[in-house]
Length: 148
Image (cartoon, one colour):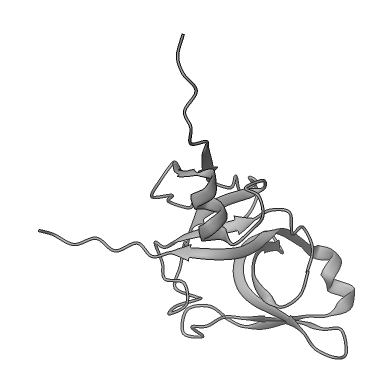
C-alpha cells in the first residue's frame, strides 16, 4: 500500500476564457503549476488555496507591472469589484487586465499601465452590469528565458 505524501500539493490551472470574446486566442505558456499547499498559501498570501487559477498575460497593457508572457495568479472568488486592485474581466466581448479603482461618484476607473498598448477607460455605474469579473489578480510570476 502506498504511503500518503506528507506534503499535500495544490495544482493551479489555466482559467478557461469563454468562447465568444474577441481576444480569446491566448497562448498559455504552461498547462498548470503544482505547488505544495503551504507554498501556494505563502505565494498567494491567502488562508487557503481554493479558487486560485492562472493566466498568461496576453499583451503589454500592464507593463512594467505585468509583462506579456508573465503568469498571473487570480483569485476567482472575486466575481465583482471588491476594492482597488488589478482585475481580469470581460467587457464588450473583450478580456481586460486593468487596475480598477472607484471614484467618489461611483465610476470605476480601469487603468492601463502602458497607454501605448492598452487604453485606460471609465466604466459608468449604469455600464457596470456589462462587466463580467473573472477574478482579482493576486500575484505575478515573472517569466524570463534566455539562451545558455
